[in-house]
Amino acid sequence: MAQLEITDVSKVFPGGTVAVDRFSLKVADGELVCLLGPSGSGKSTLLRMVGGFERPSSGVIAIDGEDVTRVPPERRPTGMVFQSHALWSHMNVFRNLAFGLKLRRLPKDEIRRRVEAVLELVGLAGYGARQTNQLSGGQQQRVALARSLVLEPKILLLDEPFASLDQHLRERLREEVRDIQQRLKITTLFVTHGQDEALALADRIVVMRDGRTEQVGSPDMVYREPATPFVAGFIGTMNLVEGRVAGGRFERGGFGVPVPVADGPVTIAVRPEALGIAPSDGAASHVHRVTDYGTHAIVDIELADGTRVKAMVREARDWRAGQGVALKPEAFAAYRDDAVVHRG
Ligand SMILES: Nc1ncnc2c1ncn2[C@@H]1O[C@H](COP(=O)(O)OP(=O)(O)O)[C@@H](O)[C@H]1O
Ligand SMILES: [Mg+2]
Image (cartoon, rainbow, N blue to C red; front, top):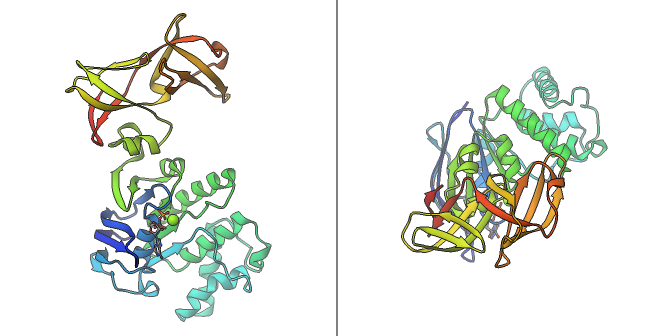
């Protein structure tokens, strides 16, 4: 069990790229926090600094109150799992896992006991004698995870560990990681660019953009109340309609909502599931396409001015291309200058 505190950490690479920009975060004992952001937003650099593989340009990283900013990786109580499994291909699974324990000069029977226990934990009991190149991609990532866990780190760091796997396997492994993490109550930082992964895994999500925090909150919070249009557009499917408020009302191509703020530009964000639609002959907006996903359908709508929005409906068969629709947003947010100015 451990707490992690990152205070005002920046990383400027030679050449001037600011990868991480005055970033601060506290991770509580046993908490799983996902760093979520697009490619290049500084997630890996931040994680590597926590693991000690990269030195911050400024700022402090502390674990359980102890400053580790200048401590090398092998002397930090952290374990890191990378995107591409960096297993040693000339060693079997057992020796891959035993390696770090041997360096610590643990007795042989203790090493065997711990390796067997961790193999059991990741669902690979009995795989010790296997060569790593005889494992599937998913099994290799399980071994990579086991190799970190066997050293009993206080803090587990995972950098897109399942990105190279197919979606089915990725979903299964992330559930396993969550189970293991909760069983061990291990403080965890998990990097991903997949919003579904973050929503499914995290106690809290940190949405990153250009090396900075855009929003921190529970999955529910960042999904339901995105603080900025960037978060709104990044997490889940969101209709973002830009335009102007005039006289307390936003209107664009037949899409209208009351927005009681001063006249001026706003961006309206509404989820497809919160955009009510009704057939309306002669309406300015019409159905462009209907896509049936089995559990639900998505109706693509073209507004009078050509803007496209999506609405979620139960039954695809109720809708056909060309049909006129009236729009009734049931829940929406209005943003101005990157901040929420109204929720309706
Ligand atoms: N070793 C490096 N040298 C120079 N620039 C780097 C280095 N590593 C990362 N960067 C730059 O830092 C920024 C953040 O990268 P990274 O942390 O890998 O982002 P993410 O993991 O979110 O995709 C990017 O602009 C990237 O090009
Ligand atoms: Mg990365």
